Length: 160
Length: 414
Ligand SMILES: Cc1ncc(COP(=O)(O)O)c(C=O)c1O
Image 1 (cartoon, rainbow over the protein chains, first blue to last red):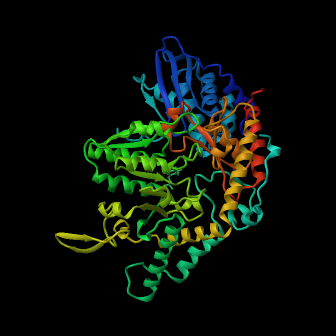
Image 2 (image 1 turned 180 degrees about the horizontal axis):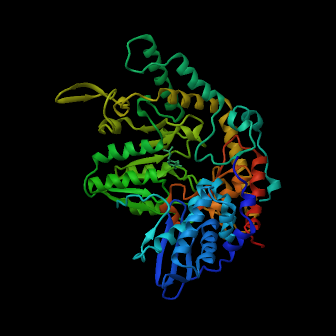
């Protein structure tokens, strides 16, 4: 049986969606990347300052469903102030949670982002929850800056 | 209008619902009928009966069973022809769906296009009536011109007139858009096309299931629709075309059944419609479409349509009473024909449809395969509820109750 959204759209999620603390442009960000899911229209630009391997500041702009926006906001809560390696580890934990392979202790480390746990029962919304994290992973790669990424498969772009 | 003032037409919806196995025994309010309709038992039985008693490859065997299969298949064609008012059954081609029908015309009629020819495409078209034309234009060096509608989904004949010139070969437009639900004046558009010797292609995917459509009266040159949106099985669709046009057009797919004779260096094609039905046909699907048409005639189509219009009015007036809900298109319920597309301020359509799903209400979110239209309207995406005669007032009520809960559930207090 499908999970009940009534419990899914909980206060943590709606609060992060309505009042996203990190949703604003950064002035002169050191790194940025756009993350889009064309089929559902989720579209964010993640901006980070990374100094000596530490994420010193981060923000995002864009629009999309509540899940994509709240998830990106919760993610920034978690990763700002962490090292690149710690952020990647958290990303791995988040994906583990989505795959329902996470332990209770690990889940705690995700703090409020753990409120998205039940998304694993809503396959069509997983890519919304993962968009921010996926963009983070791409942006943290050594030389990457700018450009665009997606959690959907890449299509061919043919003009006609 | 006040919801209470809406008069209920005479229609025994509970009796009709009992004919639909999937919805009669569930809590689900199925309001995604523009995507596909549910199937009555009569349709499921007819297809099964065909396979149990008459199955052989139509056209291929000389034994009785194959002849019987052929007859049944051709009988279905005659029923469809009568249903859409075609004078000649051979102008009805069976395809897989509206998409294939439209691709068939775009490819085959498209082969007759020349460099510099112009095609007029309405901006509200489903991608299936947009992309095949762009591809045809690209192949032939023809030009696509867009006809734009206003925010209520209305098209002006004056705008159309100003796009038409002696290079215009074709106008293509849905009779009812799957986003607006608004009925376009196809008859007048066809007349304008014919003035300059152009043809009119009508996408009837949303109109044929909800209105009597008569190709002879409308004088359209082509009409496409899908069986699955009008109670029949998935995998059967129709392309109607005027015989004189179909005769001139080259085949779309080639292979078995569509030939007269083949030698190593020449081929004579079969005549219309078989020229356009290459390979083994979907006989079971055609029979299911015939059964769907019979079913519609038996339940009294006029009353069924009046019921759909009634539910549309109830839903429309109810939606207008919910703050922050914006109905896309016309602000008159009679211009919606069972299709209500909307947005809710600050709530993304995917969240909207997920919340509906939680209340066992099926609606659709996204751009409904009409992305250019959404760009034209300046709306990224929308939610759509679409009705069929087997829907109930109770379902509309549940929809409206859930609709009113959505903003509060997302944390908005006003
Ligand atoms: C107006 C319109 N045209 C064409 C189509 C394509 O129909 P199908 O997917 O059955 O080919 C649809 C349905 O999705 C539609 O609503």
